[in-house]
Structure formats: structure tokens, C-alpha cells
Image 1 (cartoon, rainbow, N blue to C red):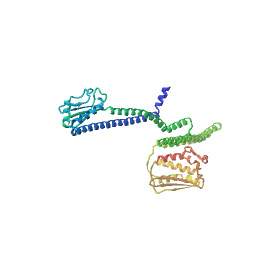
Image 2 (cartoon, one colour):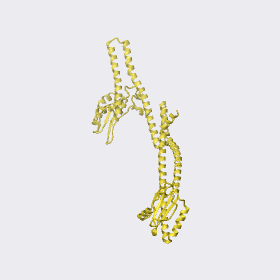
Image 3 (spheres, rainbow, N blue to C red):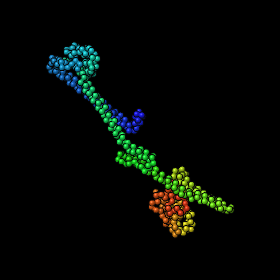
Image 4 (cartoon, helix red, strand yellow):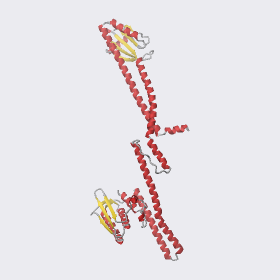
Length: 445
């Protein structure tokens, strides 16, 4: 059980972010400490070289100005103040004979004097090198130089003091690294948890919704632009889902209401005919009524399919260049007899020519639905005005009427499938005309 919990914790994004942060922080510290170490080592080596070369210059000046005795005294004094592990020297004449030397018992790897004199003569200038001797615990920095009057000097100083400084740097760096690594893990975990609070709230909201609480939303707080965008997008998605669910409920209710009438009519006619019909004429009348109601159902189903195909972009449109003015005029002429029968004035206001790219049959159906809707709900003596507005960027087809109008509270619902205003319930219709018109308009951009 404990192992499983640890395994789950290791899979969390917070844990991974903490590990990444700690790893980057640790690598950065290691790089910084390495730079400090090597820079310090370089500075210490440069200082040691400068000290050795300054000593050589001092000895050259002493030998030139004061002679050999003061130089021997100075070297002897230097040797007396240092241990054999920390300092050594050899002063030789031009034949390689040692004039004065420190204790060289620990330096078995030193080259013979004659070979050393040849090497110094060949170099012509003082040169330095780092030497390692088996019996010493530290490296030795050695300077070789030819002094005035044919004297040759080999002198070395131990790296013991410099090594101690570098060891202290390493110890302090490791201790500091461990302490900062511990703090970085704590700080990284805190930062990761803080950054993921918004994500956790989105998760909690999703869990609430899965339990049926569709009204729950992610609170918008100042936790960073990315989290705010995530919360805003998630809330917008929830609003859309809620709107779709509400729409489905309303469509279901409207479908149930609109399907009930033709089905009830079919069943009522069938029952009445079955109980009372005695002649062939009565059966024919029942059959005709049944066919009529079935046509209404088919019309409704076909309209629903057309809307779905248009909204999904599945229906193929025969997009060609058409004159919208001509299409609108033809549709108005088709509906003019109906308008005259109802005592309505149908007028058209169109430009001389308005060319668009569209499907002629679909545009005709769109205009027919709008005209049918306007004529149906405009009382006798009213007027219906159809106008086309055409400019470089937009084309509008407007159908205005003096009908009963629509309540402001219902304006947002009129394009929903099967939605019918209360005052239109008495009129025949499927409640799909405006939905289909909107789908066709959107398909044309």
C-alpha cells in the first residue's frame, strides 16, 4: 500500500516539476562551484609563480650587487624557516657542482645536476613546472633559472597551503550544495503545488460536474495568465455544454409536442373509422388523412436532416454565381397570390443587380421560409417588405412585416429547432423553418 502511494506520488506533475527544478538548480550550483574552484586554483597558481619569479629576480639582484655570500645566507635562512616537505632548492655553479642545497632526501626523482644545468642553459630564461614526488603528499611548483656569474638555481615550493584552501572550498561547496538542494526541493514542491492549484480546481470542478452539478464553475483568480485562460476556456466549455443540454431538453419537449398532434390525429381517425365506417368512402377519407399527417411527419424529419447536414457541412452545395435580385423577385412573385388572398401588401426593394456565389436552390428555400413565416403571422391589412442590400463586403436580405411580432424574451430562441412562440402555437408549422434558414445562411458564410 505504501509503495503504491509512493508510486502514484512519483507520477504526479508536481513531483516531476520538483525533480526538474531541483535537478536544474543542482546542476547550476555544481557548475558555479566548479567555476569558483578552477578560478581559485588558477589564481593561487599564478600567485605562486609570481612569488617564485620575484624571488629569482631578488636573488639575481643580490648576487649582482652583494656577491655570493649574502645569497647563500638568504637561501640558508629560507631553508631553515621551511620544512623539507614545503621548500627545497639547489644552487650550482656552471659545472653543476652544488654550492648550497636544502635537504633533498625526500626528492629521489630529482634529475642529476649536470643534466639540470644543461636544461637551464637551453631554456635561457627562467621556467616553471609542477613536479610530483613519491614521498611527498603534495605537488611541488619548481622554478629553474640561471643567475648572474654562472650560477644556476632550482627552487620549489609545496602546494600544501593551496591544496588546503581548495579542500576548504570543496567542503564548503558540498555542504552548501546539500543544504541548498534540500531547500530547492521544498521550494520547488511549494512552487509546483502553487502553480497547479488552478489545475486542481479545474479537476475538482470536473468531478462535481460528473456528479450532476452542471452549474458549478471554476473560480477565476489571479494565479497567472495560463491558469486564467484554462479556467476561462473550461468555464466557456461548460456554458456551451449546459446550453446544448438545455437545447436538447427544449427540442425534446417541442418534438414531443409537435409529433403528438399528427400521431393523435392518425390514431383518432383510425379508431373512428374502425368503429363507425361502413362505406369505402369513409376508409378512403381515413387513408387520405393518414397520408396527410404522414407527409407532415416526413416534412419535419427531412427538415431536421437538412439542418443537421447544413450545420455539419456534410451537405454538398452547388456554389455558382447567381443574381440574388432575380432570385428574390422570383420568390416574391411566387408568394404574391398568397399575400393577396390574405389581404396583405407584398413589396420588394432590390438593387438592379446583386451577384453572389451561392446555391440557387438553397437560397430560394431560405427566402421561401422567411416569406412563409412573415405572411403566416401578419394579419389582414398588413404589409410585408422584402429588401436586398448589396455592398462590397456584405449582402443582406431583409424581410420586414407588420405582424404580431416576437416578445423580447423569446428573440434568442427563435432559431432553435422546433421552437415556436406561444402566439404561434395555433398556426400550422414544424418550428424548423427559421432553423433551416439560419443553417443555409451560415453555410454560405
